[in-house]
Length: 320
Image (cartoon, rainbow, N blue to C red; front, side, top):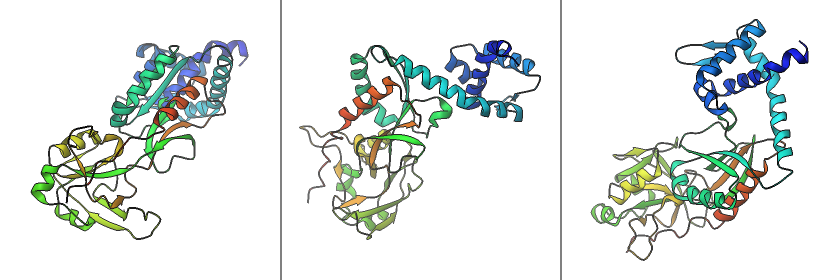
């Protein structure tokens, strides 16, 4: 096929690569700014031009045929290079501009990322941010995100990872709960308490501790815990802890500030540190590429500066 014959199909070929990533005509149409009917019609026209079925449609899902996948595998690197080259040229002139699609956990996004986004957009009005808050693990490349904000111990090797700050998991309870049920002095005593569990962690019902100040030691204490509430959101767990429903782990960014008033929560087992739960650092993550758009670079630098001091003081332990 000559370049003259191919040129009218380039936009439809690009649409096919987006559909391969999203597996959804609805999401493909939203991402490209066209109607769902138009996206479906353009794929049908592309199939007629190619003389072979490229997309397998069912009532529940959209997938590629072998021919469609072969076509996408051959085209995707070229479209990636075109996108990177175009972004690089746009970045040569003027102030940073463009759309940044960002995903972040709900609690971290609501409490700490949203104010920083507002401050950033005031500084750079020609940049637009689309922020999706979700506690599920998002595949950035497949779902078209430029950046993810995550707390983890091990960012994937396939991504560029910028450290924003340190973070830690803290064991907390309300003074009222501890007055009713007693204050545990050793991790093993947690087995006899109501413990609130975070569903997003595969080790939710097993907590591992080391003594504070001895984190390089191999001495560890593990305890199996249970309680009346499990949730996949730290804000939900925080409110349940404040209500006195039990003892639970929160990332430090979800701990309510004490201010000048008595703290709603106190630090339980302050001489022990929880291991490997919510993650020890907050990262900005991006799928590896040769070029990082200037808008993304500026946003990451803004986050690194504004997160640098972490999340403030840890609540005190219960009174003796």
